[in-house]
Amino acid sequence: MISSQLSVTLAGALILSSVPASAQDQSTLVPIAGVWSLGETRSCDSGPAWVFFADGYYAEVQLPDGGPAAVGIWRDEGDAIAYTHAHMPFEGHERPMRVRHLTIEERTAEKLTTRNYRGVTRTFHRCPANSLKVPAGQDAH
Image 1 (cartoon, helix red, strand yellow):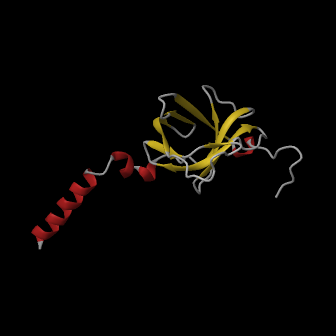
Image 2 (image 1 turned 60 degrees about the vertical axis):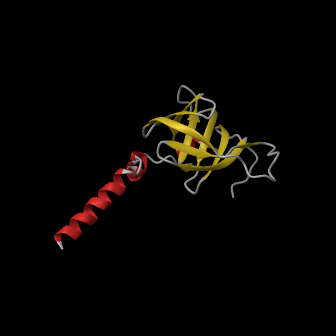
Image 3 (image 1 turned 135 degrees about the vertical axis):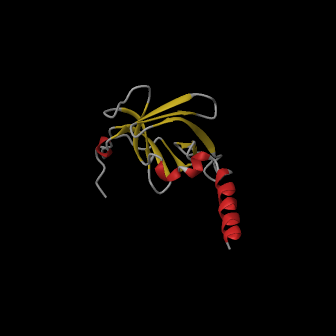
Protein backbone atom coordinates (compact mmCIF):
# COMPACT_ATOMS: atom_id res chain seq x y z
CA MET A 1 0.00 0.00 0.00
CA ILE A 2 2.75 2.45 0.97
CA SER A 3 4.80 1.66 -2.15
CA SER A 4 1.78 2.27 -4.44
CA GLN A 5 1.08 5.62 -2.74
CA LEU A 6 4.75 6.53 -3.13
CA SER A 7 4.65 5.58 -6.82
CA VAL A 8 1.58 7.76 -7.39
CA THR A 9 3.19 10.65 -5.50
CA LEU A 10 6.43 10.38 -7.49
CA ALA A 11 4.57 10.09 -10.80
CA GLY A 12 2.53 13.19 -9.93
CA ALA A 13 5.68 15.13 -9.04
CA LEU A 14 7.34 14.11 -12.32
CA ILE A 15 4.31 15.17 -14.36
CA LEU A 16 4.08 18.53 -12.58
CA SER A 17 7.79 19.20 -12.98
CA SER A 18 7.48 18.71 -16.73
CA VAL A 19 4.84 21.46 -16.95
CA PRO A 20 6.34 24.90 -17.68
CA ALA A 21 6.53 27.21 -14.65
CA SER A 22 4.21 29.72 -16.31
CA ALA A 23 1.48 27.07 -16.56
CA GLN A 24 1.99 26.05 -12.95
CA ASP A 25 1.68 29.65 -11.72
CA GLN A 26 -1.32 30.61 -13.86
CA SER A 27 -3.57 31.11 -10.81
CA THR A 28 -1.13 33.60 -9.25
CA LEU A 29 -0.55 35.74 -12.33
CA VAL A 30 -1.81 39.33 -12.43
CA PRO A 31 -4.99 39.37 -14.56
CA ILE A 32 -4.66 41.14 -17.90
CA ALA A 33 -8.32 42.05 -18.49
CA GLY A 34 -8.81 45.82 -18.36
CA VAL A 35 -7.85 49.09 -20.06
CA TRP A 36 -4.12 49.50 -20.83
CA SER A 37 -2.51 52.61 -22.35
CA LEU A 38 0.22 51.83 -24.85
CA GLY A 39 3.56 53.66 -24.75
CA GLU A 40 6.67 54.27 -22.68
CA THR A 41 4.75 56.40 -20.17
CA ARG A 42 1.30 55.94 -18.67
CA SER A 43 -1.26 58.03 -20.57
CA CYS A 44 -4.78 57.27 -19.42
CA ASP A 45 -6.21 60.66 -20.49
CA SER A 46 -5.44 60.38 -24.21
CA GLY A 47 -3.60 58.21 -26.66
CA PRO A 48 -3.57 54.61 -27.85
CA ALA A 49 -4.86 51.87 -25.58
CA TRP A 50 -5.88 48.24 -25.72
CA VAL A 51 -9.00 47.10 -23.87
CA PHE A 52 -8.69 43.41 -22.94
CA PHE A 53 -12.09 41.87 -22.18
CA ALA A 54 -12.18 38.93 -19.76
CA ASP A 55 -14.03 36.79 -22.32
CA GLY A 56 -11.09 36.85 -24.75
CA TYR A 57 -11.81 39.82 -27.03
CA TYR A 58 -9.84 43.05 -27.21
CA ALA A 59 -10.14 46.40 -28.97
CA GLU A 60 -7.45 48.92 -29.84
CA VAL A 61 -8.84 52.42 -29.17
CA GLN A 62 -7.78 56.05 -28.73
CA LEU A 63 -8.45 57.28 -25.20
CA PRO A 64 -10.62 58.79 -24.03
CA ASP A 65 -13.44 58.26 -26.54
CA GLY A 66 -12.12 56.97 -29.86
CA GLY A 67 -13.91 54.04 -31.43
CA PRO A 68 -12.07 50.79 -32.16
CA ALA A 69 -9.24 51.06 -34.68
CA ALA A 70 -8.47 47.34 -34.44
CA VAL A 71 -9.98 44.26 -32.80
CA GLY A 72 -9.02 40.68 -32.13
CA ILE A 73 -9.08 37.81 -29.70
CA TRP A 74 -6.48 37.15 -27.02
CA ARG A 75 -5.42 34.44 -24.57
CA ASP A 76 -3.15 34.70 -21.52
CA GLU A 77 -0.45 32.03 -21.84
CA GLY A 78 1.44 33.11 -18.72
CA ASP A 79 4.70 34.08 -20.40
CA ALA A 80 3.00 35.46 -23.52
CA ILE A 81 -0.25 36.89 -24.83
CA ALA A 82 -1.50 35.02 -27.91
CA TYR A 83 -3.60 37.34 -30.07
CA THR A 84 -5.09 38.04 -33.47
CA HIS A 85 -5.23 41.57 -34.86
CA ALA A 86 -7.35 43.20 -37.56
CA HIS A 87 -7.30 46.93 -38.35
CA MET A 88 -10.22 48.95 -39.69
CA PRO A 89 -11.74 48.59 -42.25
CA PHE A 90 -11.19 44.88 -41.46
CA GLU A 91 -10.11 43.83 -44.95
CA GLY A 92 -9.60 40.10 -45.20
CA HIS A 93 -12.33 39.39 -42.66
CA GLU A 94 -13.45 36.35 -44.65
CA ARG A 95 -10.25 34.49 -43.67
CA PRO A 96 -9.07 33.45 -40.20
CA MET A 97 -6.47 35.80 -38.74
CA ARG A 98 -2.94 34.65 -37.92
CA VAL A 99 -2.25 34.08 -34.21
CA ARG A 100 0.71 36.13 -33.01
CA HIS A 101 2.40 36.42 -29.62
CA LEU A 102 3.47 39.22 -27.32
CA THR A 103 6.20 37.72 -25.14
CA ILE A 104 5.81 39.05 -21.59
CA GLU A 105 9.12 40.35 -20.20
CA GLU A 106 7.69 42.17 -17.15
CA ARG A 107 4.27 41.71 -15.57
CA THR A 108 2.98 43.72 -12.62
CA ALA A 109 -0.47 44.93 -11.63
CA GLU A 110 0.27 48.30 -13.26
CA LYS A 111 2.62 47.51 -16.16
CA LEU A 112 3.17 44.94 -18.90
CA THR A 113 6.40 45.03 -20.88
CA THR A 114 6.15 42.80 -23.93
CA ARG A 115 8.01 42.08 -27.15
CA ASN A 116 6.01 41.49 -30.31
CA TYR A 117 6.66 38.95 -33.07
CA ARG A 118 8.91 41.48 -34.83
CA GLY A 119 11.06 41.94 -31.71
CA VAL A 120 9.65 45.41 -30.92
CA THR A 121 9.04 46.28 -27.26
CA ARG A 122 5.41 47.17 -26.48
CA THR A 123 4.78 48.67 -23.02
CA PHE A 124 1.28 48.74 -21.54
CA HIS A 125 0.19 50.69 -18.43
CA ARG A 126 -3.01 49.80 -16.58
CA CYS A 127 -5.64 52.55 -16.59
CA PRO A 128 -8.82 52.92 -14.56
CA ALA A 129 -11.89 51.50 -16.32
CA ASN A 130 -13.41 54.98 -16.46
CA SER A 131 -10.53 56.16 -18.71
CA LEU A 132 -12.61 54.90 -21.62
CA LYS A 133 -15.54 57.18 -22.48
CA VAL A 134 -18.53 56.87 -24.80
CA PRO A 135 -17.78 58.63 -28.12
CA ALA A 136 -19.57 61.96 -28.59
CA GLY A 137 -22.91 61.49 -30.30
CA GLN A 138 -23.20 57.80 -29.43
CA ASP A 139 -26.12 56.85 -27.26
CA ALA A 140 -25.42 54.59 -24.32
CA HIS A 141 -26.73 51.07 -24.88
